[in-house]
Amino acid sequence: MSSTSIIYELKYEVKSFPLIFYWKKGLLTILVVLLVAIFTYLVLKSLLYAIFAILVILLPVVNFIFPSRLKFYSTYVIKEQLLLKTELNYNDFDDIILLEDGLFFYKEINNSKKGFSAFRNRSRNKSEYLYIFDNDLRNKIFNLIKENRK
Image (cartoon, rainbow, N blue to C red; front, side):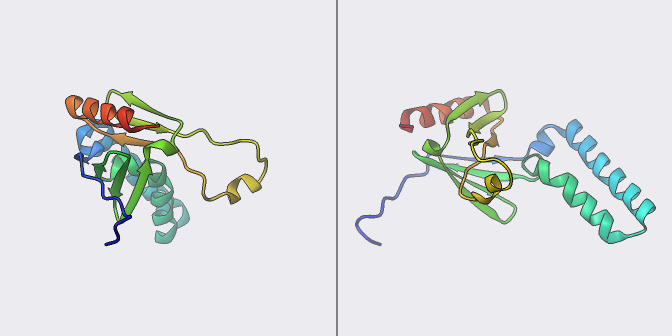
């Protein structure tokens, strides 16, 4: 290990599964996904299209459906969900908002580019919602972030 590398101490670790916490909404979500898949299969007579319909419906609600592990350090958080690991630096976001069931990492998207060229900029960040259901822990994490943002 080089002497220039900085190692940050893990401050908080949170495991979150919104589908179970909001079980009524979770049940409704699963029911809708199954009904759309069945309808797609019956109309198009294709299992491939039914699977595609499930994927299209689940993409926008991935954070809600699948459990995640959040590891908070002094300057960033690592979000592990499914097979993905994402590092979110606190200073990369315009604002971080404390809400009743989590933290919203807000990033304003620059709309100065029009048309398809706006989609070519793959390095731009997006907003991110992190579910944290424990009130005390959520407040401690929010204070940690406020103290360490520039």
